[in-house]
Length: 250
Length: 358
Image 1 (cartoon, each protein chain N blue to C red):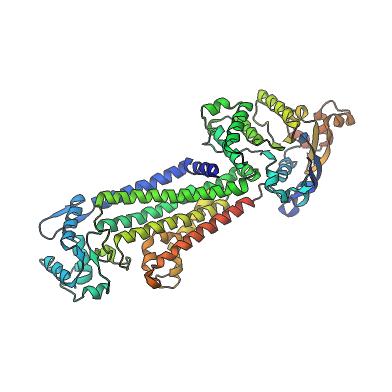
Image 2 (cartoon, chains in turn green, yellow):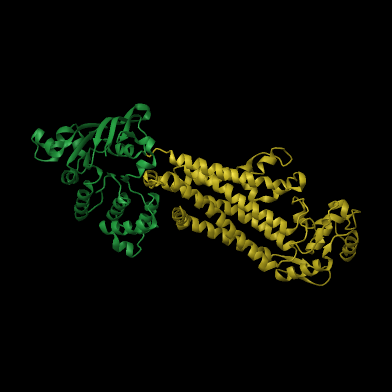
């Protein structure tokens, strides 16, 4: 499976602001870290890949076919955690997952089974058992629920926009372990401005600045190329010019 | 699909605003019904006088005495029985109220001196036979129901505004990227909205009609609404239909109102990203006919009167006139309601699915 972007542009304000500026990418199975400062265009690129936004120019192809024409066949493969994960406050975690499962077209038995498994995987089984409503969840618990819903239906393309925001260190470790398992069968694109998350879980790196891909490749090669000791130095090397102030070293 | 509809219904009814709006409508229904009953007044013209339940008993007793087909002989008998004693001091006898039958008689058959005005039954009502009896309870209940249904329309808007607008807070990301979200997910929203609107309308109807049945009984359901007290004769429905038919039309139009208001609510729910803005816009459009400078005599009024507001406030709609074959003009409101719902829902669907999530 290959997800490809060809000369992808997204402009706003009649072309005065270019959120995504001629991005060309080829994504295969594995974890890709999309790194960039705030406003670099990471979330816009994510939304273009989910088809929530239409490109101003360019194409997104899945195995050579434009995703615009694939419709439900493309959405069937998608798992998406948006940057600001929203939920229904009066639902319980299980109800929310069952709702998303119904939207994804899972039958009742599969939905129940997967919801139970995912709640356990993200450490929300106890809250589900107590029928605790989402409105009483902490930020980290809501984020874990967001991760769980993205994984429903065994998607083959996983797009995580700032997935570790609000997660405590233990949960971040658990999330990285989960990514390693998923990497074998899926295209995983991880967008974040927290370098350590990407450094530990994404072998492939895409550096984005002002809507442009300034560099992409295997993490180890990028480091060797410039003699960097860590990914942070790679980032600072390629994305200098003020953006480095926005980078969190976690 | 059923599961999705179930979730959408849960979303609608789990909201505090929806619960409060529905509770307010039901409370209003009970208050209107009970206060209308307690404020009933009747005097049999001889010795009995009372309020509330006693007034209903007296009214029923008087009505039972003359119940049946209205004839010229019966009119003369009633005029003789209900002759006024003493000077009216210039008061128009039409506005004198003793009991429901007396008021209905005076508004049609007496002159300014409270004597017979020379009119015959056929002269007043035409060739159709008029069945008379105790109808005040049902007419009062029907009038209360109009107020409750207008309030209910606002409650339906409150309930349905978050159906799409609520998703703009972020869950739209998940709905629109899921396999079935843009199609089955949105269709489930529309089905749930319709079910919710129709469901709360049936509940409101059941509470109002159940209360009316408990307070006034079944008397008068087969009697004509034309031989009614003064407050119902003026500017009221000019058709010779029974109370039961009146209520049937009102129920049908209430369901139509639920559909058309539902369409309106869904449309603005998808159009406005803020729930408050969606509510304001939908209510403004719903109440717009009130401020339109269209006289009832104008041909344009025949169109205006088909709008959702008049489906709930059905008296104006049913006063417009009849179509050929004795069909009431009000029947046209049903296809209008259906079209309003379908158009509102389809546009809302299209707007929601084609949005660009920035």
